[in-house]
Length: 149
Image (cartoon, rainbow, N blue to C red; front, side, top):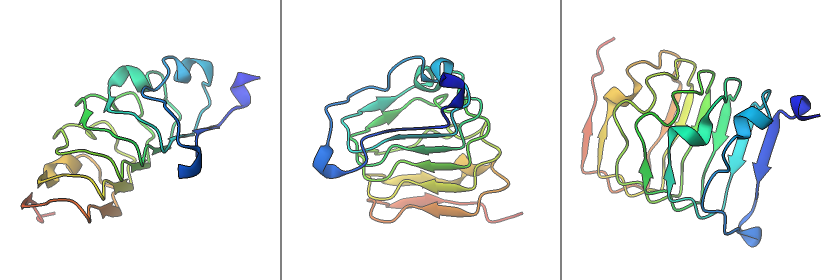
């Protein structure tokens, strides 16, 4: 029964790299109790809100080792329980400032090994539980942070 599925992973290692270049529509509707979504070692190039529709219970998203270059600002708006987001080893040059505004449960964010040149810490302004951020191995030239609490 689809209501029993809490973890969906598509491809888990480089040896099995897939030609998946999009996230199938309706995953949130088909698996309403989904908590973990992983699509690794694929060929995703962009992400949008429709990819994550009705993912009300998803807590962890792993999209590393793809070719993601673009993420729409409202991509994760329908993932309110998101705790961990991994976007490492992609081709991101920037991150929208409101990308995580609806993810108040977020604790861990990983965007290491991308092509990010400028990073604005305001992206985390609505993430009070944030405990870890990984940004190493990017092309960071400018970091904007407000360390006042």
